[in-house]
Image 1 (cartoon, rainbow, N blue to C red):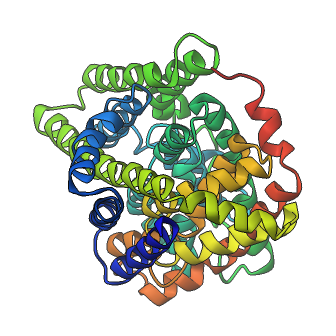
Image 2 (image 1 turned 180 degrees about the vertical axis):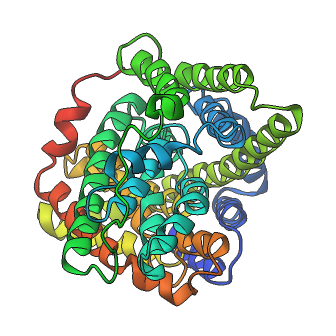
Length: 434
């Protein structure tokens, strides 16, 4: 009876999500109702009242608002606005140099952001007009920035990785280290794709007509705020000076000090950064509370164990299991935002992955990569809609989706490499962990 209740709860959850009920509300309603049916009203109320504190009181989770504050302060203070110009001065002579500069600028922005949406929006405003002016096809220019924005959740500090580490009870530092390798690999593959496109199809990405020297500006002057933050936060984090949680506080304080020293942080901008940090943190935490309740509901009903046992009985090999998981997340990514897709599936998948002896650090990095592919796939690729908002006069929604098609293919290749060679993540993640 309990397993039946759990399976019925999953069905109701999917129905609510299909009806566009907010993920957090759907998770909490289904969990509360299911526990009420199984154990009674008082236990359901007890779990509802204790779960928010138990979840939010997590010390590791306090890194989320700190890293968010670092990113919002860096963005509103304009510390990241010159990344594209600096990268352009280095790569401008190469075929597809502007496009590659945009990808590298996204990678730099990712090191202080942790959000693919923020990355796509910030760099899209700067890079797309310059790429269009240089003769790039609008669909390719906008597609490049929509795809480049996904690097924002791969390069630490990734909010998705922090949430995953908390739920999977894994070292956030190790997941961060694995994310660096995949983020850099993604940037490199994207740059190679842009270079080859420019070489083979100059009508899409023309060669530069007026090559500039790297001396046409002070590159160090443009990027020093980001370099200081990266060295401060990740040098200390990966060097063992402080934990991921402490790194968030150090990064937020560092961003505020640098912005104040450069005179770019008036009170109005700082207040906006604080409000956006609070709003984003609250929205993430309420989803997390719902996910914890859903995990307890599935555990109390025995559904998580039942599903894990059933799938284990199928005796799926490593490749078959990974293909099944990849298909699952690619489908979910078409219709759900990443946090919701991750948190409704982890309660079911984690027992299965443990039974199959899958490295959870590696899986966390693979999972984030899969979720970010969903940010650019139709019909609800959120990065595509963000780029549409910032570049609506250059390209239609259909144009942008056509522009990201090649990058989706590149992402599938990267996912295949990660599955075939887990060492691409585990060797890097094993260098240092706390």
